[in-house]
Image (cartoon, rainbow, N blue to C red; front, side, top):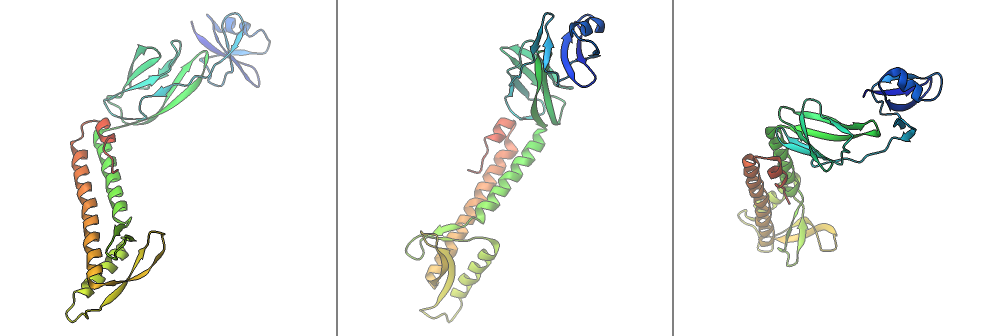
Length: 254
């Protein structure tokens, strides 16, 4: 049976199912209204043939807001008398309010519309990407996490107790210069150099380091950076080997 929206000069009145527009207009029980093909999502009421009933809100959900093209996505909480507008993607109703959306052949962002005569429209965002695009995004995220880890600083007990040392690019250059200076010929036995670090209380200041101490800081800085680079390399291999979005989502820096 066709669905119509009843409107007057100012308002959308209701959604009606009726054999003809004329019958739909009579269902409204008032003058000066007209029937328009289709169900307008703004309509607040639905005529069930006897009396108007409020259109209800629905709260569907989606199994994943991101899918690799070709994967299937479940839209849950779809009433039996409602439908999912999935554009060019095939769908299959599984029962229990689940509708399976097949993303094969589609790539891009869209808003799935869940609609029905008795319900206000609901929308779910879905981002469908190729596996190659998903790999690229994950690879970039891992690279960014690696860069952040390298410049986040490291802890060293070269001074006898643990201190936090900065590792931004300028800090790395300053440390390399200090280590190099400590190894130059003719360095006095009591040679020291100030270097910026923070104690357990978070107090940053220049603290004196002997040649041995600054060299130990340098060794530990290199080890921390190499550890981050090694982890990045390992995770990047996993990204290249991943064959599904689920596998990619399981790859995390931490």
